[in-house]
Length: 152
Ligand SMILES: [Ca+2]
Ligand SMILES: [Ca+2]
Image (cartoon, rainbow, N blue to C red):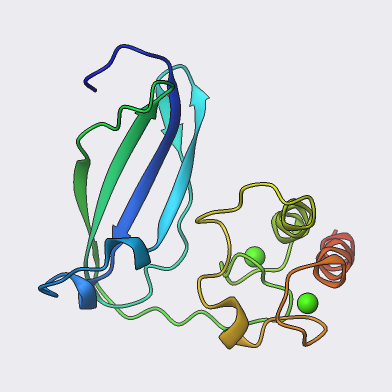
Protein backbone atom coordinates (compact mmCIF):
# COMPACT_ATOMS: atom_id res chain seq x y z
CA UNK A 1 0.00 0.00 0.00
CA UNK A 2 1.18 3.48 -0.74
CA UNK A 3 -1.21 5.25 1.61
CA UNK A 4 -1.73 4.63 5.26
CA UNK A 5 -5.49 5.15 5.10
CA UNK A 6 -8.12 2.71 6.16
CA UNK A 7 -8.76 -0.04 3.65
CA UNK A 8 -12.05 0.33 1.91
CA UNK A 9 -12.12 -2.55 -0.51
CA UNK A 10 -10.09 -5.67 -1.21
CA UNK A 11 -10.72 -7.69 -4.30
CA UNK A 12 -9.20 -10.41 -6.41
CA UNK A 13 -9.02 -10.46 -10.19
CA UNK A 14 -8.84 -13.92 -11.67
CA UNK A 15 -7.16 -14.61 -14.99
CA UNK A 16 -8.32 -17.98 -16.33
CA UNK A 17 -5.81 -20.14 -18.26
CA UNK A 18 -7.21 -19.40 -21.71
CA UNK A 19 -6.90 -15.63 -21.30
CA UNK A 20 -3.37 -15.50 -19.89
CA UNK A 21 -1.44 -14.82 -23.06
CA UNK A 22 -3.75 -12.54 -24.94
CA UNK A 23 -1.76 -9.55 -26.15
CA UNK A 24 -4.50 -7.10 -25.31
CA UNK A 25 -5.86 -8.51 -22.15
CA UNK A 26 -9.26 -7.02 -21.45
CA UNK A 27 -8.73 -6.83 -17.69
CA UNK A 28 -12.14 -5.31 -17.25
CA UNK A 29 -13.76 -8.50 -18.52
CA UNK A 30 -11.96 -10.79 -16.13
CA UNK A 31 -13.83 -12.33 -13.24
CA UNK A 32 -13.33 -10.57 -9.93
CA UNK A 33 -14.34 -11.42 -6.42
CA UNK A 34 -14.66 -9.06 -3.50
CA UNK A 35 -12.98 -10.13 -0.30
CA UNK A 36 -14.36 -9.27 3.09
CA UNK A 37 -12.44 -8.76 6.30
CA UNK A 38 -13.05 -11.78 8.52
CA UNK A 39 -10.53 -10.78 11.19
CA UNK A 40 -8.32 -7.69 11.47
CA UNK A 41 -6.08 -7.80 8.40
CA UNK A 42 -7.55 -11.09 7.15
CA UNK A 43 -9.54 -11.07 3.97
CA UNK A 44 -11.55 -13.90 2.54
CA UNK A 45 -13.61 -14.44 -0.54
CA UNK A 46 -14.96 -17.23 -2.64
CA UNK A 47 -14.62 -17.93 -6.32
CA UNK A 48 -16.30 -21.05 -7.65
CA UNK A 49 -15.36 -21.15 -11.27
CA UNK A 50 -11.89 -22.70 -11.44
CA UNK A 51 -13.43 -25.10 -13.90
CA UNK A 52 -10.89 -25.34 -16.67
CA UNK A 53 -7.69 -27.31 -16.33
CA UNK A 54 -4.68 -25.02 -16.26
CA UNK A 55 -3.03 -22.23 -14.34
CA UNK A 56 -5.09 -19.36 -13.01
CA UNK A 57 -3.46 -16.20 -11.90
CA UNK A 58 -5.10 -14.44 -8.98
CA UNK A 59 -4.18 -10.84 -8.26
CA UNK A 60 -5.37 -9.24 -5.06
CA UNK A 61 -5.80 -5.49 -4.92
CA UNK A 62 -6.65 -3.21 -2.03
CA UNK A 63 -7.97 0.32 -2.10
CA UNK A 64 -7.92 2.70 0.84
CA UNK A 65 -10.50 5.34 1.60
CA UNK A 66 -8.50 8.02 -0.19
CA UNK A 67 -8.67 5.96 -3.38
CA UNK A 68 -5.07 4.65 -3.45
CA UNK A 69 -4.95 1.22 -5.05
CA UNK A 70 -2.17 -1.12 -4.01
CA UNK A 71 0.07 -2.97 -6.42
CA UNK A 72 -1.45 -6.42 -6.82
CA UNK A 73 -0.27 -9.29 -4.76
CA UNK A 74 -0.36 -12.18 -7.19
CA UNK A 75 -0.54 -15.88 -6.79
CA UNK A 76 -1.13 -18.82 -9.08
CA UNK A 77 -3.67 -21.54 -8.69
CA UNK A 78 -3.24 -24.74 -10.63
CA UNK A 79 -6.36 -26.66 -11.47
CA UNK A 80 -5.17 -30.17 -12.37
CA UNK A 81 -8.32 -31.41 -14.08
CA UNK A 82 -11.34 -30.03 -15.86
CA UNK A 83 -14.20 -29.62 -13.44
CA UNK A 84 -17.75 -29.96 -14.55
CA UNK A 85 -20.31 -28.03 -12.56
CA UNK A 86 -23.82 -28.94 -13.43
CA UNK A 87 -25.88 -25.86 -14.16
CA UNK A 88 -28.81 -26.14 -11.81
CA UNK A 89 -31.88 -24.00 -11.67
CA UNK A 90 -31.64 -21.30 -9.03
CA UNK A 91 -27.85 -21.49 -8.69
CA UNK A 92 -27.40 -17.73 -8.70
CA UNK A 93 -23.69 -17.76 -7.78
CA UNK A 94 -22.76 -20.73 -9.96
CA UNK A 95 -21.13 -22.84 -7.25
CA UNK A 96 -23.13 -25.97 -8.12
CA UNK A 97 -25.53 -25.79 -5.17
CA UNK A 98 -28.81 -24.07 -4.52
CA UNK A 99 -28.93 -22.88 -0.95
CA UNK A 100 -29.27 -19.87 1.33
CA UNK A 101 -26.32 -18.18 -0.33
CA UNK A 102 -28.31 -18.00 -3.55
CA UNK A 103 -31.35 -16.67 -1.69
CA UNK A 104 -29.28 -13.97 0.01
CA UNK A 105 -27.57 -13.09 -3.22
CA UNK A 106 -30.94 -12.73 -4.98
CA UNK A 107 -32.09 -10.43 -2.21
CA UNK A 108 -28.94 -8.37 -2.57
CA UNK A 109 -29.63 -8.02 -6.29
CA UNK A 110 -33.20 -6.97 -5.49
CA UNK A 111 -31.94 -4.47 -2.94
CA UNK A 112 -29.46 -3.18 -5.54
CA UNK A 113 -26.53 -3.91 -3.25
CA UNK A 114 -23.12 -4.49 -4.75
CA UNK A 115 -22.87 -8.06 -5.99
CA UNK A 116 -19.78 -7.70 -8.18
CA UNK A 117 -17.88 -10.94 -8.45
CA UNK A 118 -20.53 -12.90 -6.59
CA UNK A 119 -22.95 -13.87 -9.32
CA UNK A 120 -22.74 -16.73 -11.76
CA UNK A 121 -20.52 -15.23 -14.47
CA UNK A 122 -22.64 -16.65 -17.30
CA UNK A 123 -25.95 -16.32 -15.55
CA UNK A 124 -28.12 -15.45 -18.52
CA UNK A 125 -26.62 -18.08 -20.85
CA UNK A 126 -26.42 -20.86 -18.28
CA UNK A 127 -30.14 -21.55 -18.10
CA UNK A 128 -30.15 -21.53 -14.30
CA UNK A 129 -32.76 -18.78 -14.16
CA UNK A 130 -35.85 -19.98 -12.34
CA UNK A 131 -38.61 -18.22 -14.22
CA UNK A 132 -36.92 -17.75 -17.57
CA UNK A 133 -36.52 -13.97 -17.62
CA UNK A 134 -32.74 -14.34 -17.16
CA UNK A 135 -32.83 -11.79 -14.38
CA UNK A 136 -32.17 -12.41 -10.73
CA UNK A 137 -35.16 -11.42 -8.66
CA UNK A 138 -37.91 -12.54 -6.34
CA UNK A 139 -38.44 -15.84 -8.19
CA UNK A 140 -34.81 -16.84 -7.53
CA UNK A 141 -34.89 -15.70 -3.90
CA UNK A 142 -38.05 -17.71 -3.16
CA UNK A 143 -36.81 -20.75 -5.06
CA UNK A 144 -33.51 -20.84 -3.21
CA UNK A 145 -35.19 -20.30 0.16
CA UNK A 146 -37.49 -23.21 -0.57
CA UNK A 147 -34.56 -25.39 -1.66
CA UNK A 148 -32.67 -24.45 1.50
CA UNK A 149 -35.70 -25.28 3.67
CA UNK A 150 -36.23 -28.65 1.98
CA UNK A 151 -32.63 -29.73 2.40
CA UNK A 152 -32.85 -29.38 6.17
CA1 LIG B 1 -25.26 -21.54 -5.46
CA1 LIG C 1 -35.51 -14.75 -13.02
